[in-house]
Image (cartoon, rainbow over all chains, first blue to last red; front, side, top):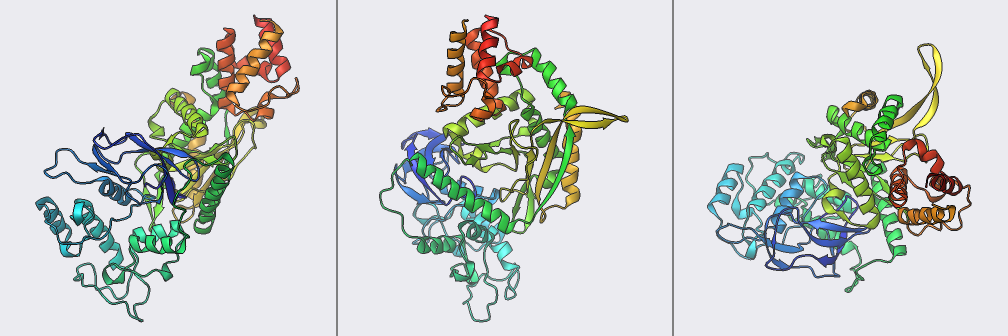
Length: 456
Length: 80
């Protein structure tokens, strides 16, 4: 069960679109999952053949549960990889997590490739949990062990350093601050689990991901055995409200927001747009929002300090600009799917993607990757709305851009007063990641870009 | 198009853009965008559907005339 947004902790399988024996490619939609917010198309993490479906239609399971096993093609032995691929993903991409499978019951032969990798990373294979078939150690387990060991060793005063032998320590009264793996810390924050109450089972009693999951599961009442698959509209509205409440409360609790605002002259952009639209059929026309989104995406590339995630006390910039778009739903609530690689799209394509996303967000058919990949989010309250909007950042992102309504305003130009269309641009940014100077530069870049609409 | 036909076309277009909205009870002079909470994309879609149905080209400069039911009926009836 993938994490389809930072506010999700469980999901219900509504439909399987594949069956055992089917070949799937990475990115293919294989299932429809119902979350608090909406039904979402879930994509395969890996290419291969569906070995079996683990979770049945109608079942609700916590995030991290293995949904299906995909056998990789062209391997000496077929290996289940859904969990593995998802786990690798979880380490690469913030906001995603995967639960390890039950511990290995017995030692298992390890392939030479993995043995080599373990040697490279200095990992003792005897201490690695296998998550492959019958507890076999697969590559992801080694990477996982390496990822866990590195940061976990540093913060504890009792740690002897990264080269220390990995003999398990007994937790004692003088153990001080509990060791917690970064993944576990992030997960605990997401699930709202108090780490002080979690018993660690990792090396040196470190709290691992699985421990957090266990603590979370035991403090929550068990879900009813048979969960109704599709939610009613009223339930949906309520559960979406709760999901938004959790995420926004977390944002304001954790993220020290700072705000900057600017006014961008839209006269050149509007007149360029007007002339361009005159030549085009209605279906090809652009709305000003397309220019604003493109400017926001290009500016994110020019000011990369605002494009990425704050994870484990550090900013991780993203090379790609995936522009999240806050879309309000007719029944209330909102979704923030991403336009992938928005800075690389021309305006026509961007416009088409924006229309497509809005339509699908409102009909409830978004893809999982669209809901998890945003690196920076834009809220645009549109041409009927207010003049300015100061948003709340979507964790773990570090910035939220706001565009108000485009309005005619008196402006002094060359000593004369005239009226011009202007838009108020705002930025809410994470003060842990950047300072006001960076935020102000970002809005200045947007304003400059909008003065050269033909280059957008 | 007669005014009656134009009105039907407008109701149908609005029905597609804002499903479930009660367009019958809209006052003739109410601003469609405000009343039905249409954003710029919705309004573009509305113009697109109307344009397809009536076979008339509608430019951005015509948008103000599509603002209310009364003005839109007048505009479309005058065109065809």
